[in-house]
Amino acid sequence: MHRNIVYGHSEWETHKCCWRHCRHFFTILASGVNAISLGPPVFTCTLIAILVAGFNQAVVDRRFPHWVPLLRVAPLPFELTSPVVALLLVFRTNASYGRFDEARKAWGSNVNRTRDLARQVLSWIRSPADAGKVDCLLRHIKAYSYCLKHHLTQENTLREDLKGVLEHREVESVMASKHSPNYVLQVISELINQSELSQWEKIRMDENITQFHDNVGACERIFKTPIPISYTHVTSRILLIWHMTLPLALWESCDWLMIPVTFLSALAMFYIEEVGVMIEEPFCILALKAISDGVAESLDGLVCSHREASFRWSCCSFQPIIKEDSHVAVMIHSANNSKSEMNQKVQLQPDYSG
Image (cartoon, rainbow, N blue to C red; front, side, top):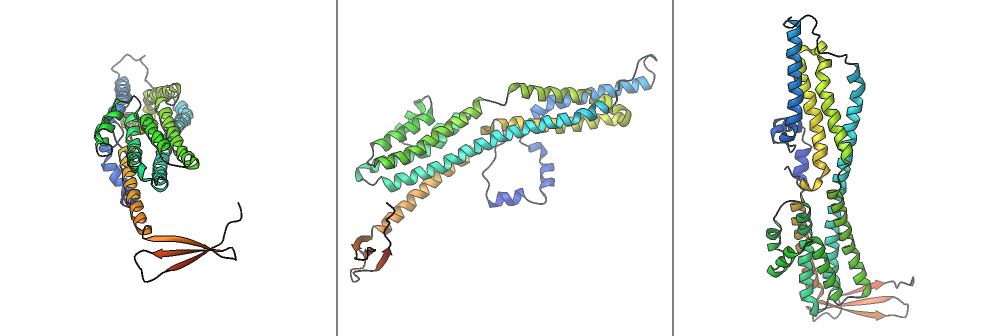
């Protein structure tokens, strides 16, 4: 199955290249649209066109009795119904793209919430006794994306994905759970509840966990509920019947050329319909592995930034001085420079809004 990639600058340059049409034409056989799915309907319609052309040619050559008619109809019914076929395809592809877009937004929310939750964990959990909980929290925040990817796809790679993220016993616990995303979120919730945090901080962090649960539910809803089956059936049946009878209307104007005309028309229409079916279930084509790896890399970057910032600010001590004019002067003393008692004064206007 063709899978999208996460775009960067080079991918966008290639995507917008003026030679993209030629590149797309010569790579048509490598298209993500399944040729096996297109084969049966396109072959059937083309075969009917060949049979109609051969029969009509035999009638013209008087190989049948004189009372055998040509297989032909007026093209007017097809001219009147072609907009209906086009609208069916438009509605089908638009509905499928809406599902694809919703799935990508849910995963985009996952990316944003994991970064925010990791930032809160690093910034708010300061007790030395909770150092082990911080590490465990960060590991499970990374694991959440991989678990959700495994939950929505048929790829049995969860154990391999988690080997470099969780400890061995944690991996076994995740693999033994019936619903790995919910299990990981519950572990995160329990660790936060056991950490030394204010009630307000716990509430703020719980909002991110709630958003994770909402995203899991949105993805499961998309996966388990397709576009109404009746609409899919109607679109498929109308396309097939329309193209199976199309050669009858093309004989007068196209003669034997109706065979390639029918083939190209069926190929184009069923190609578009197949794209709609393919993106209807978006998790098989979204770059979930790349997104999950990006989440893990982002969290590693946050940890490095946090450690660097903590090291820099640990070299400074702050001493507030209250003056008579109700302004606050913050004295910043450098631990590395014993000769200078005061390096900087920052004037802060007090907040009277509270």
